[in-house]
Image (tube, rainbow over all chains, first blue to last red; front, side, top):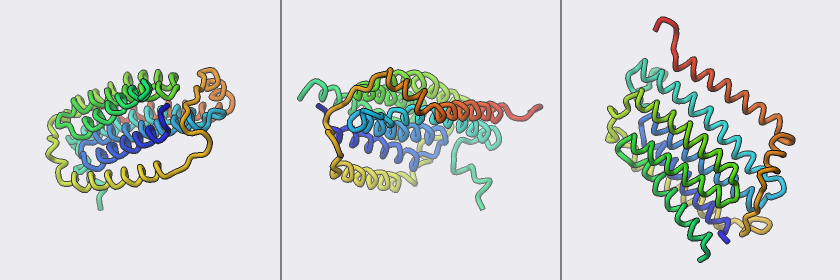
Length: 102
Length: 165
């Protein structure tokens, strides 16, 4: 018997690690990877709640499917943008992408 | 400790360690490989939660497609030219923010009383998930496929650039 709190605490830790990555790293691809970690934490949370508390409707599992779909779309689009950025500015550093900075 | 708990702590430690590897490692290719490990460990957690369908989807979509895409982008943008030292200035603040968030959410989680029995994992069958996905959630499912195709077409057009470039 694994208590529900174990999974929830683990997903909090994973989300915080992803948050640290998003805030600390300056490479656009690494930021995307950290966002993936955060999305994984969210999926764990959804599935945990579905498996422990909502076995009749299991909405959490359906939501996790949609999270995976949106994450795939997001990563494809974002990497295309990073490629464009690299082609135009020869950098993947988000601090140097300051064309729209006022 | 039951064998379930032993497996849980092993997979959880693997997840956290490889996630830390993603955000702190100096070499970006190592980060990507750690990301694959972290995603596989999360797939193991899904199996522990009796969601084996999602674990398979996780291995196929993340382990296959997403990480390959990320590795491709890394090689095309030659990110090894960007040393990790460049992200030094923000590190302490980022660590502070992440720690504050972690403490808050762990306190919130452990002090919450969840309704119903919250120490038993219910097995949700693959059949009922697919039933529900194609009846109750049919419209969101179709919209998700539309989102995917629009996003991937946009990605191709963006990455290819204009004619004659």
